[in-house]
Amino acid sequence: MDGNTELSNAMKTFSSTAHVHHQNFIKKKLTSDKSPNTQPIPVTVEEEEKQSAISSTSNNDLICVIQTLIESLINHNSKDSNQKEKMNYYKFSNEFKIFIMEMMK
Image (cartoon, rainbow, N blue to C red; front, side, top):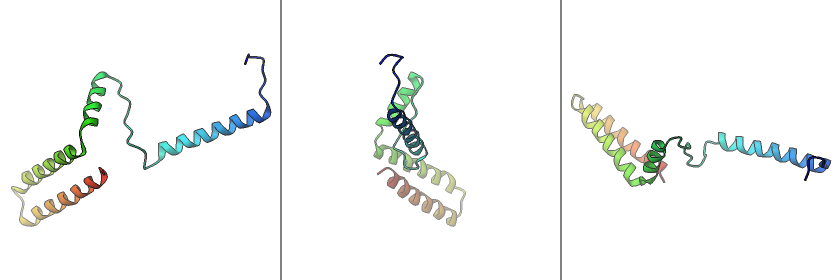
């Protein structure tokens, strides 16, 4: 179409309606709590490599790392703690493990 062609009223209405629906769809997706596993677009090669390494890590690897971190925190903090505090750390770690495992399904 050249610059002298004028759109019909029906096409103008359709275009406006489609534009509004498209904007609403994008807003809904961006504000949704259950958005898909989106990752920011890497700007540098270094960020891209880091993102690639993270993406290639399996869920089991991540769970293992998290469990190791929790256990090291428990062991570090429990040296000077009484029995009640130790039990609280263990309870927290078990609840956290369950929570992480559910999230990663």
